[in-house]
Image (cartoon, rainbow, N blue to C red):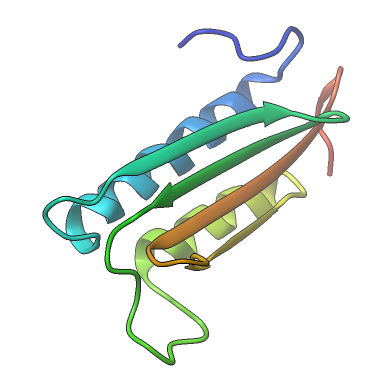
Length: 110
């Protein structure tokens, strides 16, 4: 795996990779046949931010809290590092997963 940022702890990089991987799996399962995907990974103030946004069909109308085993696992991964993960319908259609994973030079920020 290429290094996104110098000094990025392995646990943070692996968690970001797994969150992106699960998000892409969810797009294949739920996004629809022709769902396009945008992935953004940024380092901002000792925090790795991962956004996966598809332009597929999104979740059911009125579903305020989307829950599934994959999403639960992603939230747990982020929480283990002292981070957060949000997931839900994207503005303009589709679905968006956003994770913020804080870290320090010594390792994950907890």
